[in-house]
Image (cartoon, rainbow, N blue to C red; front, side, top):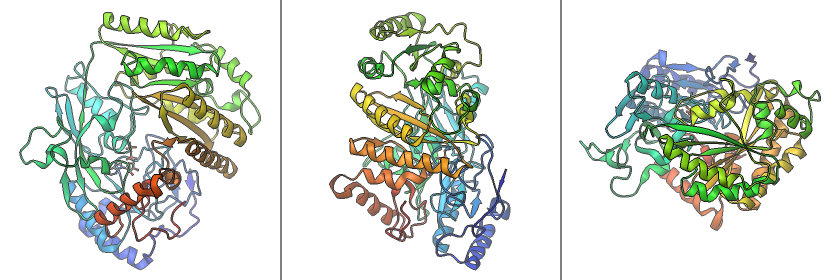
Amino acid sequence: TAIPRRREVPALPQGVTAEAFQAAMADLRTLLGAEHVEVIDQALRDGWYMEHPNTHDMMTILDDEEFVASAVVYPGSTEDVQTVVRWANKHLVPIFPISMGRNLGYGGAAPRVRGSVVVDLGRRMRQILDISAEDFTCLVEPGVSFYALHDEIQARGLGDQLWVDVPDLGGGSVIGNTVDRGVGYTPYGDHWATHSGLEVVLPTGEVVRTGMGALPGNNTWQAFPYGFGPYSDGIFSQSNFGIVTKMGMTLMPNPGGHESFLYTFQREDDLAQLIEIIRPLRIRNILENVAQLRHVTQSVAVRGQPRSDYYEPVDGLVPDDIIHAEAAKTPTGDHTWAYYGTTYGPPEARAVKLAAVDAAFRQIPGCRKIDTSTFPADEYFWSRDKIASGTPDLHELRWCQWVPNGSHIAFSPVSPIRGKDAAALNELARKRHEEHGIDYFPAFCVGLREMHLIVEIVFDRTSAPKKAAALACLRDMVDDAAALGYGEYRTHLALMDQVAGTYSWNDNALMKMHEQLKDTLDPNGILAPGRCGIWPKRYRGRGWEM
Ligand code: ADP
């Protein structure tokens, strides 16, 4: 569907007149080739995950016109990226780099500042520069998706040796997901922790290579992440300090077999005890992967039918008894919490770990181990099984169909793996969902010593009141969580200022340091202003924060 434009078109960057913008665009066409520059002067078009727009956030929680680009540019090389950055400094036009822009739920391809020029790296920079079966590493450009990397490993006949860790949805960029500190579900699930080496174009146009990449002629860039001196990679994740043009990633050795399993728990209140049981198993690596503990509403929604199939009223939560009755009809059966885990290694190694997990989980009355051997091939369980064994998948998207024009946005706080923390977060999120009349989709993703609670709000992006309710619910949850000492690990463009504001210890000392870095590295404030709450001095305190 085409979305009519209701503000000036193209969306002009702040302080840039229409004439200056046209002149800047003419300059950019000369520098890069007219075919690699696109001015966004038409109606916006939404798509779906695989054919997503790179012009705006197709799952916008605000007005359609808020997070909109003025133009999109397609660099073909690191040198092109340098050219674009220098061009932006000359014309004082804000630019916003994306790898592939499938960051749905966190802003998609959209820039934080309306009228920014989106630098779409993924369209032309899609080379897999290296796959090493000796070192179990690879080196990729921004346009390499998890699917593409996985497929190339298979095509080279290395599939039985090398695994790629994939996130819930595999269509995104390996670099995009990693620099936004996304997670996957094998033992290599912490993507940022498993990357090694970056090539970065700085906001003034210089290129640096981090870690061993700084040593000319080295062969260790993807094997040793630190090099010598300060470990600078960190400042290029969840920031606006540089454009990543190459990244090294470690690959997991095929563990020699895997087996996924599913346990269910009956009562909402089983959560705290279960999390207490999970913690020691997870820290000792008996539970080996980032497992998911999902709520029954999600188990029903992921079947892909709209909520109207179960419950007619369009407002309010679908009542618990209806959800449980529907869950009872599924192969998993009725439950409140479903634990999806995977164990790795040859059968005898798996058996030892599975027995330990089984004995521990069965301490909870009503715990059931589900026999998944008879599950049909399109059952969600198999999607989790694929993802936990390095095969990309898209099944997860099905819960977007829960409401018409289903869009989603996440609340993602982190905490230690403690029963009381899980219960506190679950309670505050549930309470706010009830208050705002939104069905509650929580999943606890248990890392090694911490867990992410991911609560996806699914809303109708064409309904102003539904969007307003979703945004109010999110803002309340961020504040409630911060009041209890919890913070989010990642967030949507619309919430970046609020979330950054909760990390305020010692009079916002950390943000002050980020602002100092920003002003030094990006004196003209052209690179992704406002991303992750970091505003350059040209914008700071001028009403841009939201
Ligand atoms: P994906 O391709 O996985 O969907 P995106 O390309 O949307 O991920 O990346 C998520 C966010 O991370 C982007 O909005 C952008 O702010 C940042 N980002 C992505 N790629 C780069 C990059 N190569 N350099 C700097 N920042 C990036």
